[in-house]
Amino acid sequence: MKITIDLDCTPEEARRAMGLPDLTPLHERYIAMIGDAMQSGIKPEAIEAMMRGWAPMGDAGMAMWRRMFEGQAGG
Image (cartoon, rainbow, N blue to C red; front, side, top):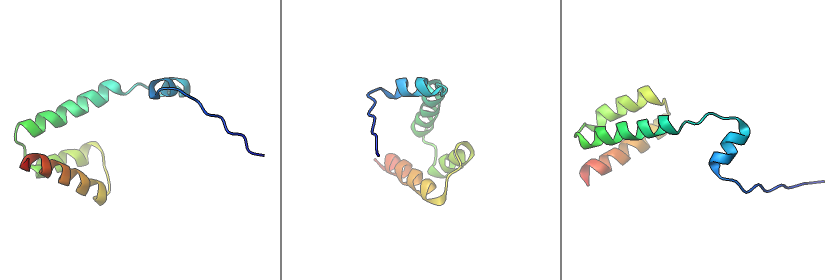
């Protein structure tokens, strides 16, 4: 037997229902720091070192971030 239940709720409602913490302020601060770094003309290598310290990722993740920042710096 298979039973399927569909819940229609926002991500915020799901987070509260599961008792997870609200990380919105942390996320907003993280995005603001990245934006400030990009506007100040920081080099992609410095951003890569900063990202490694904040959120360790595999080489594929770091390559994705590098391409994104290099694209922003060039455009």
